[in-house]
Length: 122
Ligand SMILES: [Zn+2]
Image (cartoon, rainbow, N blue to C red; front, side, top):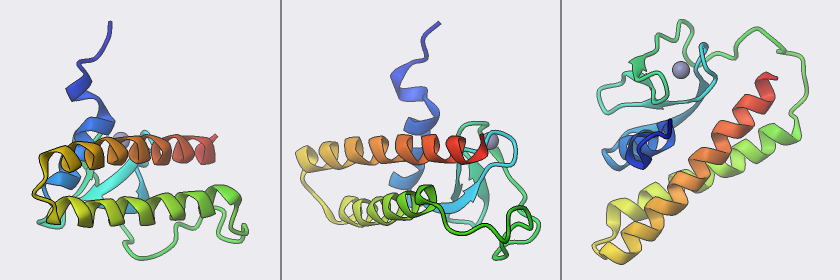
């Protein structure tokens, strides 16, 4: 069974960003997908399509606290910065053609972040 292209977790994530949500550096405790912060402050998992309660927001999770920053972390940080950059451009652009390209890039970046989070979990 193939998912409808418009209803994949990554697409849903991209749509959230288009609606003004922001990508957080948190990952879902259930599926380790990147989590989004909606405009009202809700932390949302695009994969599970549900609200996630983060108990200690703003604090590093205790697990692996002593581990040094890995190349995955660096890569993830770079991708997150790019996503925010693209999100800023999407907000400003009036050009439908550009919007389509930006949305595509956003989707690809979200896919990559998702993969990195899965790899970090493994
Ligand atoms: Zn999840």
